[in-house]
Length: 450
Ligand SMILES: *Cc1c(COP(=O)(O)O)cnc(C)c1O
Image 1 (spheres, rainbow, N blue to C red):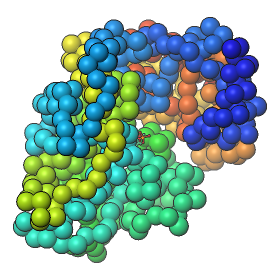
Image 2 (cartoon, protein in one colour):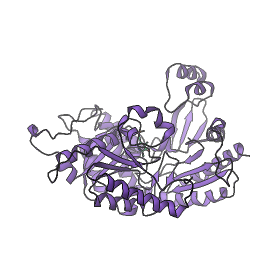
Image 3 (cartoon, helix red, strand yellow):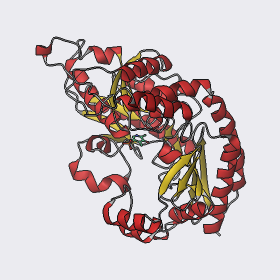
């Protein structure tokens, strides 16, 4: 089949996510056939640097011999069997290895297959936990999350989300949640300075806890970085503050590290940077090295304990997905985790983060770069019409999208968040390639924002 045959079939039958499909049909979307290291190759033989880790999940590159081998070996055993009434070898081995790598106390691994389901499971576990806990059973029905939060696309995870463009259409479907203002904002509400806004956010948080005493089942946070909101970086100490308040008010802290986990912020988990241990931890994206769909919701012994009773007590967690603990995905995850240590991925992240920080300074005086944000190897470059008053480009201009097309012509694959250009190299991408990614991206910005 020629590329154009494939493209017409794609247009005829494949509905792409987060994609205006009328436009997709008009554009010459690359059709990927292969990967090699940190590059993807299309049907016309063009090679592209994978600048966003295949949507934030790739860790060690593509066609990594160790992970390929682990999957092939598992394929010679069995591809899938259920965790309902059965166990399987890779899901046991990976859970044990993962727990060893996590902060103390997070010991019970509940598997699912994507970030949204990891969050969805956490919400239901928290809700059920308060009803069943031995110390003081309560019916708590409220969740708190932040403005600009993104926790996935299922109805529960959208309910705790706060991105209007993605979420407002579904308002009528969602359960009620409380949105606390996030201090990680580029445009502050009128009348605030950076300092007074931080103080306001903390005061609001206190107020939310005080005024909903005994009603909040969980507080959901993307630790250190609000990813889909535009790589918004929290002020230092914010996460620790949230942990302190959730402790004080006896509210479960749910850390959604679907994006930040597996080295992206400079540590294995973002939570480690502020010595925070959540009650529930959600992992996906990088968990399998970016190879296969897998997710985990990890609970503390205390949370898990509320579900332990005789069957007739009705405390079972009645939740599960067909492919939970899929052996192929868990085999990939185990190989990826071993490689993470062996090839010292965190050392590489340290080096590439410093490189990105150095390169980003080149954009500091660019008239259309309104803000530059970075944590580890997650970076966002916010493009604006007017730097002085922070006014954005008209959405119809699709500036972010055009920059991505320009970068593609220069051999780098990116994916914008509106007019925020995201750099999300794989944690193991070698420095020379990260350098090349910066060069292609900055050139693409200059192509579009002249
Ligand atoms: C991507 C993401 C999710 C959703 O993961 P999916 O696998 O796309 O369902 C949830 N939370 C965060 C922070 C994410 O970045």
